[in-house]
Amino acid sequence: MNAFKKVLNDLYANQEITVVDIQTTHFDLFCSDLCAEAIKIVVAPKKGLYTAVELQELMLHLTKQTPSTKDSFTDYENRMEFGKLYFDEKIGVRKTRTETVITDDSILAKNPEGFEQGRRIAEYERELTRRTWVYLYPNVQIALRAVHDGEDIFGIDRIDLDRFRGRTARLIVRLEFQP
Image 1 (cartoon, rainbow, N blue to C red):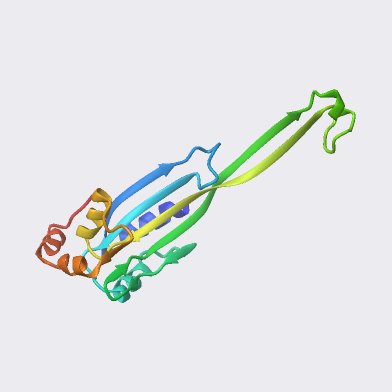
Image 2 (cartoon, rainbow, N blue to C red):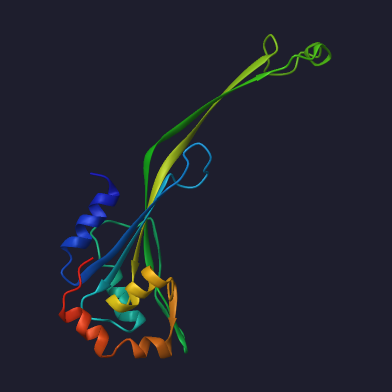
């Protein structure tokens, strides 16, 4: 089983959180120097958490899988920056073969290095990867706002965070929101 599926299974099995959204982006395998596939998984605790310490602790226990790297939750005086986990895995190899042909006699007379009878063939291999991000938000309402409105994706002002602790957030949790 690949890393993405293991992470996703762990997230769905985790009783403390809700999987809010999954977004997949595929890149042109012939042009992209980035990963071939990027998957963003958005999760939130069923019962909101509002400090960087609580969220960091939860994030580190979202899955049994070891992340490639992570961004930590950080509390500032007026803002909280959100954390996320990164999981990188090899999903294939891109093999490229190029042929260069020289037809100019004056260049051919110099016997350019690597060319035989005016031709040079080069082969390259590049690993194709998938990057899976797991974004953890303080509650379902903030996660939905990030997914649908593109707001508060990487952090939130303290005033807004305090506002989201209110009644609407508790109502969404009681209704057991499912994507």
